Image 1 (cartoon, rainbow, N blue to C red):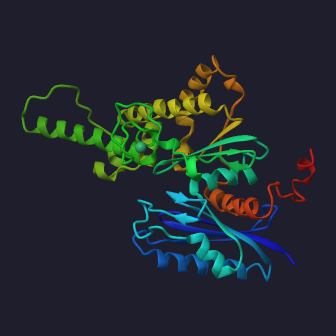
Image 2: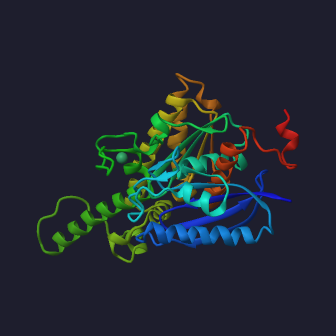
Image 3: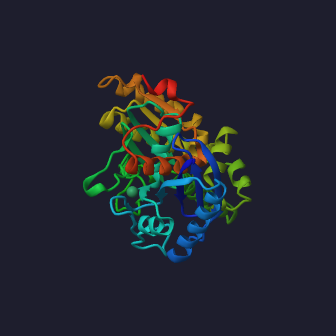
Length: 353
Ligand SMILES: [Zn+2]
């Protein structure tokens, strides 16, 4: 009888549930929207229904365990989702115990960034990397550090927040209490908000000029970025900014330049603090990683003075939206079925070395 692992990726807007073999083959995966304002009870039942559906596709396979990668903060030791700002109805939710009881199999919980890092280590670009530092740049910046297949944990098992390292204290205030954090400079929402602020100022300048008030500075007649947003700065998204920057829009280019410099500073700090074998970059903003590459190469060359940083590989992720599903399944495997890397026929030849 076949054996399967269930991997669950719980985000603020979507739930993904996959059935995987212990050797990392994704047999079936399902995805559903989640009502971020809904209660945890409703959410848990939705997840349980998805697990049931996914397991029904695997024809009586034996369930080895369930792993959940969830938006944080989480307590991975107790398997409890604490109080995520993005899911206000979820407070102190013992999701691992709930799923374990419902499906009569062991279940464990990881922070979503850690799950994504584990996924890339197990089946993605980070295979075989002893020290893998993963950076996901989306709405925020999530980081996970995997050392020989184990998530690096802070005190009491808590998840270190690389996204809130301060890269330039002249930057915006962050909800975490800091100012000029990595994610308040270089995340997708930071890029969108920076562009919105500049466009607002620029439109205000325009209005003053139209009113006959004296105006100092250069008038810029066209903005591709503003056109993309239908003339409304509030509708600017990060993907518009990267696209407009490529087309030579000066406001978009300036915003990307500022974000890119600070993004690279964060990478520099990671190199200096951890000297990993590989830094893997994922998330929506990193689909435009080429716009950030020159600054990343600049800091890697600068870091070379102190550590052999040219040997550090910096690569885009491979598993895309499913990294968290893979990583959650792998977390369950590691936690409940030994510390070894599961051997598949596909990678048996490399595992024995
Ligand atoms: Zn912060």
